[in-house]
Length: 53
Image (cartoon, rainbow, N blue to C red; front, side, top):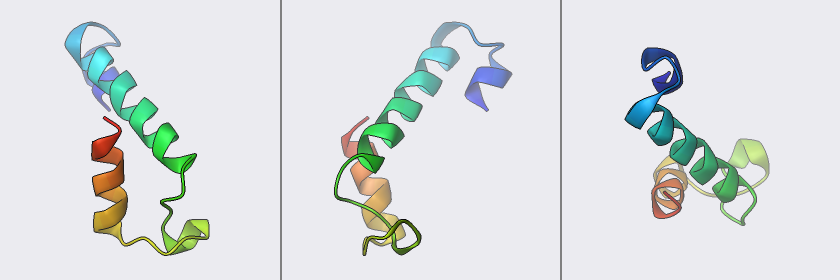
């Protein structure tokens, strides 16, 4: 969404890239929600993504 709204340039594009990288890094770790085979709550997953941001 940030990429689209900022036409993939500037601070919005940088924020988009940082968020996607944090999500990808989190998904490669041990913190996963039940639908992904883990036991983490939505809050725990969000906290893990934030910690990787």
